[in-house]
Image (cartoon, rainbow, N blue to C red):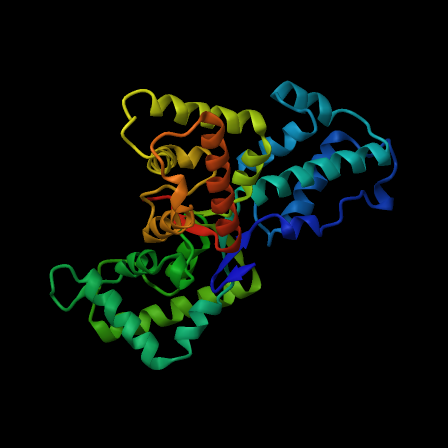
Length: 333
């Protein structure tokens, strides 16, 4: 699903993809493990907006088809497979990626020139952006900046304004050279805007022909990982044991609900909860969950079984709220 310029990649796009090997590739003499992996990555990339799969996703997918080490991968690449075997491996590989994306979605920006065209088509918007950029780059307040500052202007604009980084889109260097946006010649504000405009126009045209996908440093917590925890009785009991130990190791004065909240705020990220310090939304989430806990459950003394039931109830509430309203947080902070 999308959110303005951002798109959440949660595996739903991949589950709708073709998970079979096409008839033309049925010949077992041609269908090697190497071809299956190539086909799997191609199908995944096509389904996921042209995204190049992060290595973590590839590793998880390889493990799903029992390729846990580099030697396993090398051997598999040389293996010849029947069409049914190839389709099975392809299915498992892509399903593993979809499952991981469900638990840990990616947030991406698809840079296709649309954002750039929006403000290029509005003279007032473009003039305001150019003025702001010029002011930021004119650190000495001389009313002049050198031509090569156009490069820094693009860096300042960044993905949020539709401009890819130079490392991900080296063609930006060619566009700057083509328009003479290099060197130490000084420009006033009007000249700066006149030079910036054709650079952005060409960038918008290039991206329209071949969009690029950028993974954002944004984490999405949607309750999926927490649901898996709730289905794992052994792991859930381990959490209750740890909270019970805390209760009898110097924290006897805390009510059960306070004890649980403190434990989750310190350890929640490993369980599938957002970091308690991430942003204001997380604090509101915690308040909403614990406000729903009945007054009768704040007693200082409870039996371990009662504590376990309370922990499960609280985690279930977190999972429900996160599924309805996922929490987003910047992983840079």
